[in-house]
Length: 272
Image (tube, rainbow, N blue to C red; front, side, top):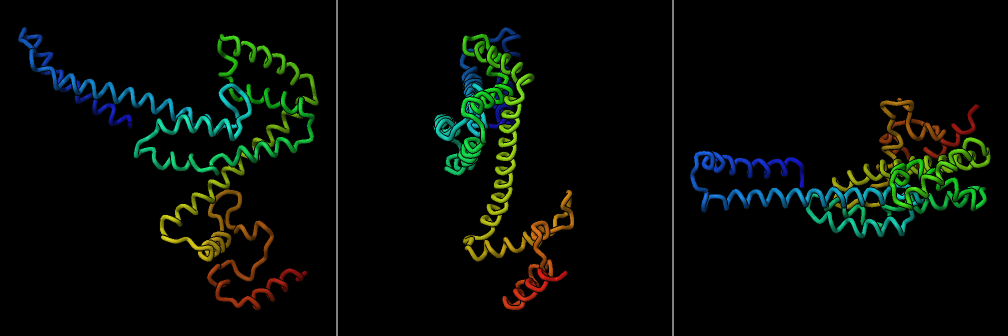
């Protein structure tokens, strides 16, 4: 339900009530004349309730894609999938169909699996790692320590003690820094994958069948294509990887025989 449609239904109800209100001001009876306006008002009210429900479900679904839960705990694939299982049925409309399909895919939560592996690989004692994760989670989720219930007060008290520890304990501060580095790298990797997927999905929309050969051809094209803006401007991905090619034209490379290309690559690699 879009905001524009909500306002449209609301305006329709208001327009139907205006002549009735004038009639009432004139002292005339409204008997038998309010049914249409009341129905429009009920439709507008139902639409508002639906919009509130959908907004709440979407916020719930978004929380499943965060590193930390609203309570400040490290998110897991199982916890995120449980949240999505509960929230996605509330988005059952054509407007949300594509989003729901994407979130239902197992790979939508792959970043959490990668995060768990990288955190466990850190050379930190388990207790120190858990404390650093708890501190970072409460830093990123301040709402978890702002309530007045017992759980929120407990988290707030723990976070205040941890803040003092972060200022005075060099080992704890180093652990938090290592945690933040992992989180930053996982986020960048997820953004890179989404960037690649956006290109692949665009090509899938243009071609009925995206074969492995066609994917390889497109990979060659994009790796030979120079960046137009940014710090990598005028350089190709192959150049950034240190690969020296006889030409940056993907079409010219395709016209070369494998033997000629192999010979030129070997010559350029041994050249002074």
